[in-house]
Image (cartoon, rainbow, N blue to C red; front, side, top):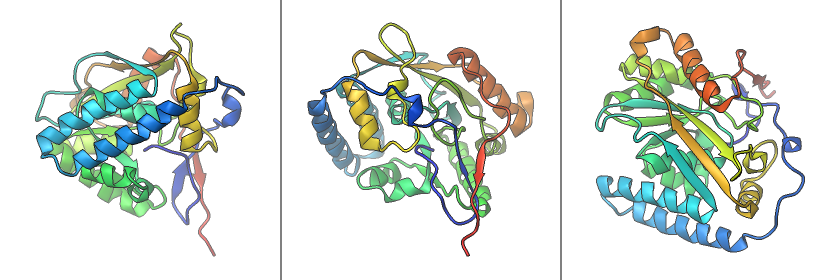
Length: 283
């Protein structure tokens, strides 16, 4: 579920303490041509996604995601080969720092993402997400959560690879959020394994790259401008060992085990208490 929390009547929204203060005040300039090429590439990818048959569309979207990262100046480094055996469902869970994470997960192999329902209304991105089988969750309505879990479990039973960011929002990389448990219940209900994926954004020297994160009140365009202005940005994905759901038996234990695996790889432990903002019901 990508993006920042926004007030809505009732329910809850995830929140993190990360603000634009977590970002470097200045980054390099330039990269406008990258933004133009990214926009053109996205338009071509979206157009083809609506006319290609499923198998070819999946291949096309993976290649399109890789090309988008390359044009943005992001070098993708993947440790591991694929999320799971083809045709068998698997729940992919990853830490979340930036829109880069979404593209990077899609660049490994075909994956259906669980996204906030507002994404469905976004120009270009919304129709593309729906076309690629994204599942949408209304974070402002707890009553819809059981239906989202059921739909996710059904897709997993059908052999889909479902990608989820259990923190619920983006973090700066110096701290990390709790892995929320709902998606793990879907894996238990569908009796499919969980694949933790650790994502790290680094400079070419291996240092953390907070300028590449997407936090606070940033707009997507501002974040993209920062990313394309960086030099030598690397996105590292580490596909960690599968966790069979029968090993732990509860969504709490499964979420904690996945969070511990990711935190041990990134060096940033995940919180033990969910951070939420309770939204008052409108009068």
